[in-house]
Amino acid sequence: MSDRILITDTDPETLSRAVEAEWGRPLPWSRLDSRRFEDASVWLCAGAPPERPIRLAKLRWIHSGWAGVESWFGRPEWAKDVALTRTVGDLPQRMAQYVFGYLLTRVLDVPEAMRQMGERSWRRWVPDSLVGRNLLIVGMGMVGVEVAAVARAFQMHVSGVRRGSRGADGRVLDARGAEDLPALLAWAHVVVNLLPLTPETDSFWDARRFALMRPGAVFFNVARGATVDEKALLRGLDRGRPGMAVLDVFRDEPLPPEHPLRGRDDVWITPHVAGVSTVPAIARDFAENWRRFTAGEPLRYLVDRARGY
Ligand code: GLV
Image 1 (cartoon, helix red, strand yellow):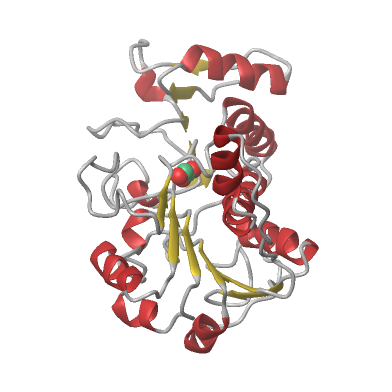
Image 2 (spheres, protein in one colour):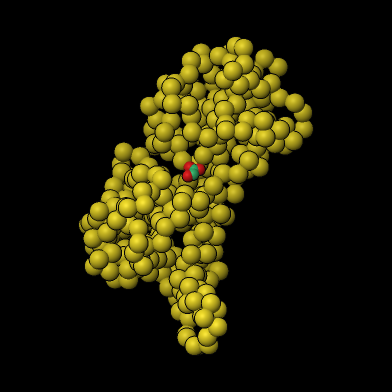
């Protein structure tokens, strides 16, 4: 086997062992401090890529530990004839759990239950319900399909919007085009942003789009912070469109303690945990693609350079 795999991660030892457990045999790893790491034809990059570009003249394939790959655009290692793949793992299920975990926390008023437990009090209330509510997914892809399935199980009405009718795997997705977005924003009680970050989606969520929302709508951002104009979101919240934001991602992370999105009852904040890639998930996706790579089969979860994600 002449292919060598460069592995970069905060804990390359654990990840390489997890990949080998999936694969069943030792693999030809090299690290940035190995002799002749420049000869690697494959790069498994689990965390953020190193700040300074690396020269890898024989590189043919990069596997990203993250699903969001915007930081690879403009990196010289991702040359024209190099494939880039992403980790998907159980991200769709994790993100669906995040959305419905926080949505139900709000709808059922779990904070009130917690308060009353602390007070040892007994004041009954009528929880709200998701049945018959409208949920809109913007950026309908593999994650959106999962969010939609869970929403339907709760008897919500679901719509999705995407560019083009086919997902990355060629599957036709049940989604509408961007021209329907204004009407769908007025329709939705819940809006879930799943857009990848590209030059076209930077500040996609602007004053105009927030103003189109149904008053009181709940807006989720579990994708990328820079798809939202945060000042426009704050102004929108002050006017009740949306009525609430649940945000896992921000233009600047970590979100500073003094950021104006903080300290508001109508904004719930989590520190980029909705769609984490775990070691087992990265190991499984990489091992399957390594099998394909060595067998000369098409790789899974390829990034489309022209599309931008
Ligand atoms: C997480 O944000 C990811 O891109 O995987």
